[in-house]
Every structure is written in structure tokens, then in C-alpha cells.
Image 1 (cartoon, one colour):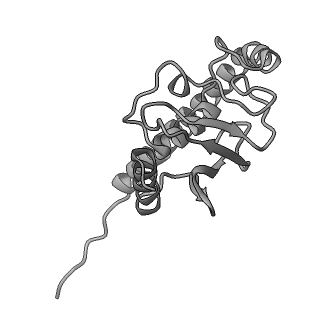
Image 2 (cartoon, rainbow, N blue to C red):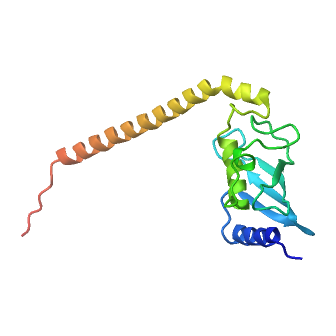
Image 3 (cartoon, rainbow, N blue to C red):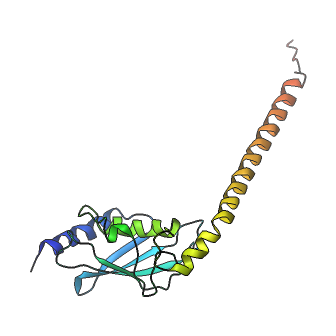
Length: 177
């Protein structure tokens, strides 16, 4: 039996296969298009970098009008992930829109790994640690930007000195006989 939810999930699956977003993948289970397994790869420059995180997505017959239930199967210590793997993310709750598809959901969760919301915590311990270390992260970012700036200035000075040396070097004249 084909329902609007099943047709939409087939369309989402086809779109996900034809144009997969970077760092996420998902597919329905073998015998039920309403239950999906997904994988999110940890974003670069985050504590989750090089991690592979498994999730399940459960859709109801009301999809896309109602969001799926999404849970991490992998253990994740994150301000917006409950102990049971549930995810505190606005688009999965009060900001859901039928325009979101599986790709958008997975990409949003991957983005949440990069940019947690400690003001709406599912894990208060992780949120507290995140807030306490925010100033240290800011200092690291400033130091990194400063090092990049210094390297660029050094490269510019070297380039100018090489250019000046090349310009000051006397040109050899060739005499043509």
C-alpha cells in the first residue's frame, strides 16, 4: 500500500542517493521504509572529528507533516543529546516544516555537533562543560587567526625582499656583434 508518507520517503531516499550531502548518509531498513538507519561523520575541527555516529529515524504515517523521531544509536556526550540518544533540536520539535527532508534533518544534526545550543540542554553536564570552556575555545580561535595573519605577513615580507633584491640586481648587458 502506498501512502503519501511512503511516497515522500521514497522521493527523499532517491534524492539522498542522487545528491548526497557531505558527511551524512541514510537508508531505509530492508523491510520497512518507515524506519531508517543513518550515519553522520563528525565535523572537522570539533571534538567529534573522525567519529562515525549511527542514528535511527522513525517516521509515522503523518510524515512530512510531523517530524520523525531521531535518536543516536552511538553514545554521544553532547549538550543537545539525551542519555537515551534523543536529540534536542528545534526542527525536530517546534520548528518543524514539511519542506524538510531526510537530507536536511541529517545535515542539521551534523551542524548541531559543530555548534551546540547550551541554552537548551538535553545533557546539563555537557552544556555546563561547553559553557565553561567557551572562553578557551575563543582564545584558541584568536590564536589560530593570529598565527595565520603572522604567516601571511611573513610571506609578504619575504616576497617584498625577494622582489627588491631582484630589482636591485644589476642587469647584464649583452653585446651583440
